[in-house]
Amino acid sequence: MVQPLDLDAYLARINYTGPRTPTYDTLAGILRAHTASIPFESFDVLLGRLIRLDPEGLQAKIVTGHRGGYCFEHASLMHAALEVIGFAPVRHSSRVLLFEPRHESVRQHMFLTVAISGATYVIDPGFGPFACPVPIPIDGTPVPTSAPTHRLARDGNDWFLYVTRDGEQIQGWISAMDEEYPVDFEMMNYYIATHPASFFTHNILASAVTQERRINIMNQGVHIIRNGTAELTQLADRKALRSLVVQHFGFDLPELETMRVDGVPGWQ
Image 1: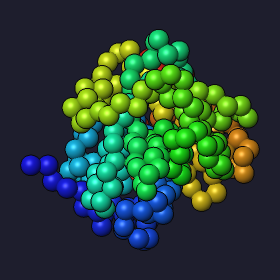
Image 2 (image 1 turned 135 degrees about the horizontal axis):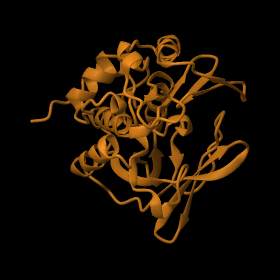
Image 3 (image 1 turned 90 degrees about the vertical axis):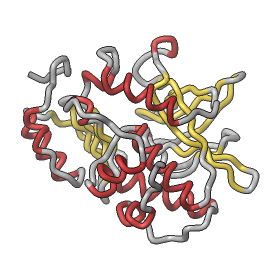
Image 4 (image 1 turned 135 degrees about the vertical axis):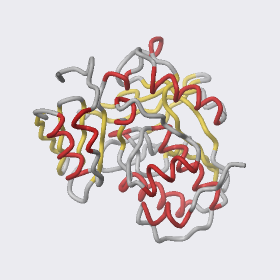
């Protein structure tokens, strides 16, 4: 039997002290707290570690260990928490369109939908720098956030999530919005974490929010965003990466200094 998530520990991890009833305000409050507290990071892929999506594994790594994770981990963790509260979240997958065209993108992203009082919202805490900190209404109404702005648009049987990058709206992902199940994401997770064609097996990706800024890491490039203005710096080596993670991501991972970086652009 799968052990349920320790809700008290999860809510403490994300610094959430609001209500625990299955209402819109609770959903919005938890999503906002989650995206502000748990970073996006895929270091375990390059470290060759098993990435678990069960509540026990997620609690050990992210809640107790104060690590971050990538989309499957974020969405699975939030799904477990919302279920304990009394919501009925539904799992979905999508093809990410940020780095490659639709016909070359496998289903590699996980998000949720939650229905409340006749309205349905997309909950997408694991979309890295493009994670929306508020529920996205499924009727296509734009969601104003600090950056970026999100909206959903339907084209036949497909739904597109639009995000704002460099002042322009672009397609972030495409999904049929079919319900999917844990076994589906175990298969996707294995591919994304291990296959040589996976974007994550040869790129360093991480993103975190602090009180004053957002820190985005893409290989050696670091974007520090303050008040909508981005400053680009370069990481000199893996020791500098570890130091940056300690400073801004809330945990120390000594293994970063010896992490395998074969094929990662710019790294030796």
